[in-house]
Length: 269
Image 1 (spheres, one colour):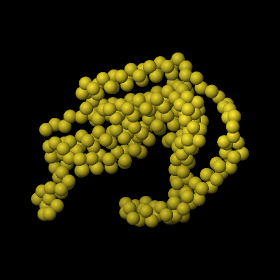
Image 2 (cartoon, one colour):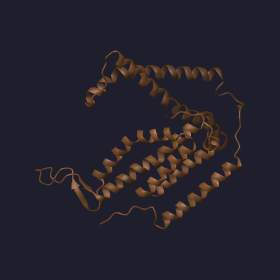
Image 3 (cartoon, rainbow, N blue to C red):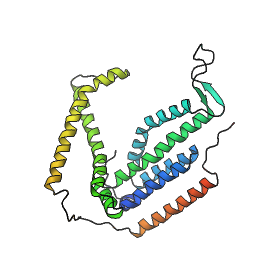
Image 4 (cartoon, one colour):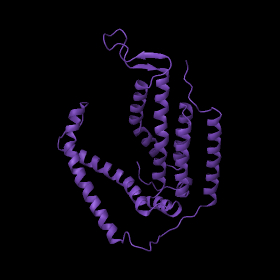
């Protein structure tokens, strides 16, 4: 889901720096605007970009995978950031001692929607970038154009590359455990935590082994030596400058809208 998917599309052909600037633009817009309607529109635009890049299915799956985190953020905001008219209480007022605790208000619901959608806006663009850009191209953009130290850029992309690898290993080990009639399902969180202990240990050893193998490969290829050369070099083309110009106009429009009061959340009395 977070691996590069080779397909011919407009998004694949864009310079990695253009896509990184796009993710920064989404981040700025998500922080400036807090209306659930506007944030929902930003998420739909990210998904639309995913479909333009022919990775719409991967983008949707990644977005759905983040819904659990969004629901948790929504509930925390609803319960602990009240404001406006009270809709109901988690503990009814007729109950003794705890009656009236954790009131659910209109402001809490709106704040919950705003924060959960904001998280989706900030994180979802990375799925499009990772599915349409080779990790080595991301390193090139960070090092060559943004002058990020190579060690930091390599560490960043390596971390992103390890996530799907470890996820695949977890799935493989879980299936092997199920084939041996080892149950890891159930709704009891304590039992599930204990059941994952036989899975966690192999994952730790596999991660250590892969890290050692990666370090050996880096040494064999002369990592850290002076006079670094690159197989390919990327230049910003006309389409990249056109997209960057469009993003600059969108940013200016977002700033004007935020200053004018548009995109701001209004809590009804």
